Structures are given as structure tokens and as C-alpha cells.
Length: 78
Image 1 (spheres, rainbow, N blue to C red):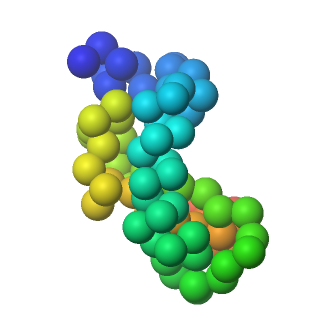
Image 2: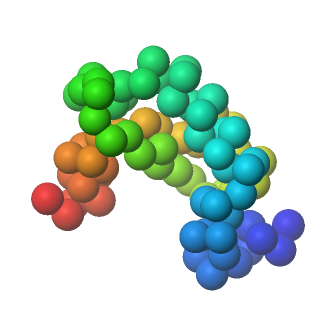
Image 3: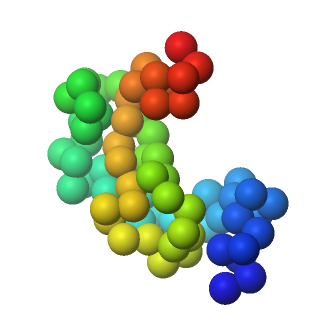
């Protein structure tokens, strides 16, 4: 897919699609609405791509649910 090749250019647009919303909701449900690293609940959760290889056709193993703090740590931001 051309989208996969240009994911950096189109990524923010992809995150606004109903397809991503459905995938994101499935992953949140699978993770029982908690961070998969620290198990925090009732906080803002991010669904992070471990790989961009299958953007638009993600496998659930391509994704991880992270709270904001763990997401920052994952990217060495905080």
C-alpha cells in the first residue's frame, strides 16, 4: 500500500479514520482499559504502534496500550 510507504506523511490523518478508531478500541478492550506496562487504570491511554509495517492492517501484536507516563518513557521523553 502506498499509505504504508508514506506513513510518516499520512500518520496523523490515519489516526482520524474510523478504521483506526475501531482497531484502537479493540486494543483498549483487549488490554482491559489499563496500561500494559504499569497497569494504571482511569488515566489517559495511548495505543502505540510497535511497528509501522502493517499500518492500516495492524495485527493486535503490533500495538501496545500505554499510559502517558509509560508512553513518554517508551520514547525516552520523560
